[in-house]
Length: 126
Image 1 (cartoon, rainbow, N blue to C red):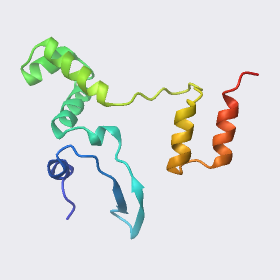
Image 2 (image 1 turned 60 degrees about the horizontal axis):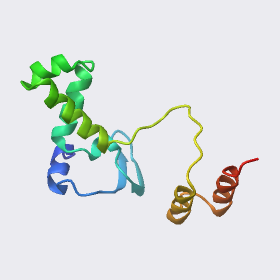
Image 3 (image 1 turned 90 degrees about the horizontal axis):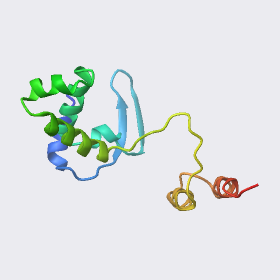
Image 4 (image 1 turned 135 degrees about the horizontal axis):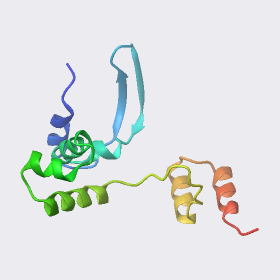
């Protein structure tokens, strides 16, 4: 039987984790590697519940106040704190990565030297 995600977050107590094996539950397929959990899964269990409630309330802070029995500033402060813990993904924006980001990914092995050169050359003005 699979363990609950909350049990895992309780065991790790906020420490950084890497998932090294994933098994598809309904198939006899396993994938091994080094996978970082998504940002939402890295939040504390209470914050995950808070985000889920916020989505269920369709982003209504007024409903969140009633649901949690706290004031507007308390909800806003918690949203701000959680928001700071999550990276923002900008969709459709062609942003040139910084040289340090390119070099870090090269060092990590997530891109090849040729890809790094291509990205670094794209940074040069034409």
